[in-house]
Image (cartoon, rainbow, N blue to C red; front, side, top):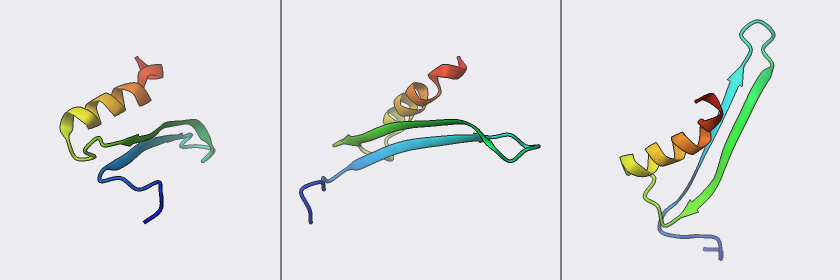
Length: 56
């Protein structure tokens, strides 16, 4: 294992495509988070909230 490995490591990414042109109109990413359980609903909720803050 390399120095970049942890028990839990996750990141979240999103794309929005224009249905007519097929082009990406928005891209969002939150960096990897260490030691945050990737299947914990509260972690996922926090990550999605941060990722989609531009749409609020």
